[in-house]
Length: 196
Image (cartoon, rainbow, N blue to C red; front, side):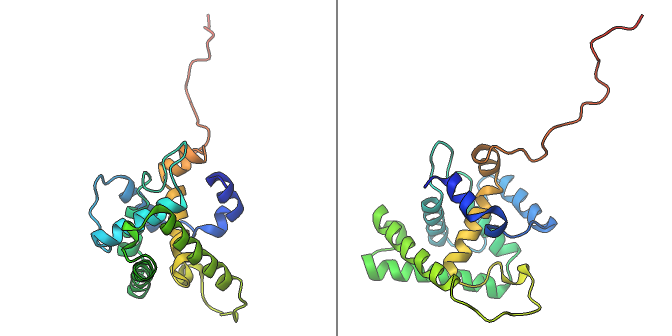
């Protein structure tokens, strides 16, 4: 399945959280800071996030998640937007990926072969889908912000990956072929005819 097909299947509204002014500011921070140093992710965690995101959205005729700096986006979200509980939950989930990779393959996720990495992510995805479609009691009084970074780690990771990619210049303009402000207004331009 191509990335464009995947994105259509998931649906932008269901796959990504609502944009808020603060979140838009963070997106601009990632886009405008070359070589930004991570604050929440250590080098191994950053490498793991980069590898996982690139497996979800690999480079095709357009750059993948790595080219769109999805890892830096995730770090900004964890540092500047997530609550302490959400950040720690994400980092525990990432540690769980390392633990599973070491148990299954005897090595860190980033050191595993590509087919091993893919098989681990597929297993995590299947677990997330099963959990997602298990009926849950309805909770009242919770808005989307309260739940965007909560729940199954891989579900949170996929949402952040898709959101980070498709709100980047690469994902939005090159992959989806969209413009931020379609059309333009050109006032006070000559009409081409001369008046006498």
